Image 1 (cartoon, rainbow, N blue to C red):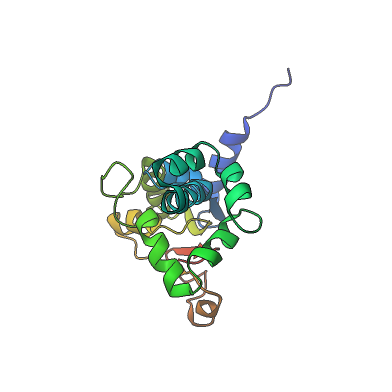
Image 2: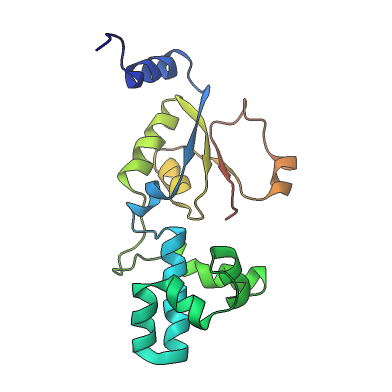
Length: 182
């Protein structure tokens, strides 16, 4: 076994020596710890709700057990996040209203959505200046909430047109870029 410095030690040393140079890419794993469902979790729940409207509790149970199978038998087109949302909520406003309950407010258990330990750890890195750019695929606002909890007011870029009015990355204390919008 070759001796050497573990990659994590090397990364930590580089981040410490060059604060603000590194960006973080966050996915659903950061928010699932807070009770936010993954994109597929949202699809499964929406298919189950559709099934319940068409076939009652039995249809919903079947859809929860195998959303793809239920959809291929009863739905239209290939099952996917975007295609399902287009069919259930044809306008941007309708989609936002439909998805709000999954990404704002409460968890499936009825608890209020709050940032996870991962969100708070990242916020501490930002507060120390180690990281200034966070790129996320998540729709929720938990990362911004965690940053605000440590006294960092991030600029959030959630739409392409927001880039025109944003502060340059080098001058912003923190920037959260939401790749899929808000």
